[in-house]
Length: 215
Image (cartoon, rainbow, N blue to C red; front, side, top):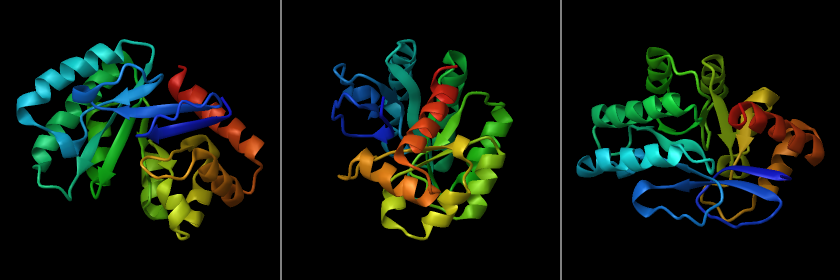
């Protein structure tokens, strides 16, 4: 593995990249090598929740399923937050049961996510994907035990540079999510911001991968 793409919706199947591809219970693709699977808060359907959770639980017991998610909370959608919390907590319970990391989608609900982690005493790694906020939130999340994954906003928002620089090297991942740019391009920017070589960055990410996914 030269590159690890922590979160992507596009399976490119390149031999030098390990891609953690986002999958949904109702559109599962068995040809994808490594994946996460979860109920995204945008796509919660009350009449499907139990069925989706059953599918997720089945997949979590396989080697190719590296994580649960993306799942989480989003205050900018119409689905009631209370409903989102119920579905999120059920997925966190599965993550604990099968000792799988969690890929988290969080929009304007960081304090709630931190509180839920504490309330449920979650011990598995929890990673906020697509992080784009200020240093204060980053440091709160890191202090609470979260990892942060950077991608689109690292490329497009120069103000994120100092936030990223302040994140400890043992607490971040890199991703492409839905952007057209390659994971190599994200690594290029990240290595520049961290003032380390690509090889050193690869070693950092490989160490973080081992800590989170190879316990």
